[in-house]
Length: 223
Image 1 (tube, rainbow, N blue to C red):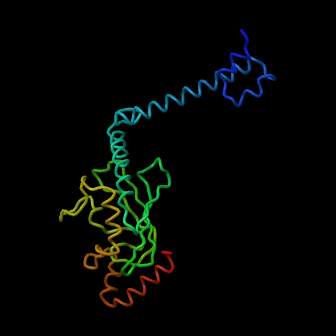
Image 2: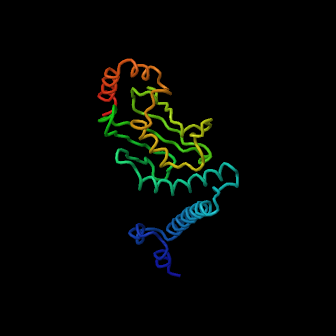
Image 3: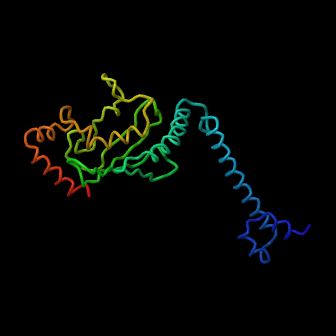
C-alpha cells in the first residue's frame, strides 16, 4: 500500500505540506490522534443536541438539569420577544450569547426626574425560572425611592411572594421585567412605599432639592 496517498486522503489540509519530509508511521499516529479528537468532539455535540431535544442535560435526569433545560428553552422564545418589544428608552446586551440567562439592561429615561441619565441593570435568570422571578440589581448609583444606593430594587413583579397579587407569577416574562424596570422612572415611581426611605422623605420635604440631588447623582454616576 502506498502510505502517502492513504494519509493524504484523511489528514487535515494544514498537514499536507509536511508529507514529503515526514516518516509515514509518524503521520499515521498524527492521523489517528486527530480522528480520535474529532470523534470526541462529535460525541459531545450529539450529547448536547440530545439534551436539548429531550429537555435534559447530559449526565442524568435530575430535577435540576431538567429545570435548566426548561429555563433555556423558555429564554430562547422570551429573548426574541423582548428584542422585538423593547421600549425606545431601553437597550439589552448579552455578554455571552450562549448564556441568555445573564444580561444587562440600560435604561435612559426621556422624561421626569431621571431624564438624561443612563442606568445599568444586571439581570440573572435562575435555574428554577419561570417558577421564580429573575434576580435584578441596579449597577448605577442612584437617588431613587424604590432603588437603594447599593443596587437593591423594590418592584412588585420581582417579589416571589406577594399578598396583593402583583408579585411574580409563571405567566410573566422577561418583557414584563424590562418594562417594569423602565417604568420605575415614570409610572411606577412610588414615593408612598419606598425602599430608600431617605429619598422618599427628601422628595416630600423639598421636591426641587430632591430634583437637584437626582441630577447631581446623574452627573457623577449615570452618564
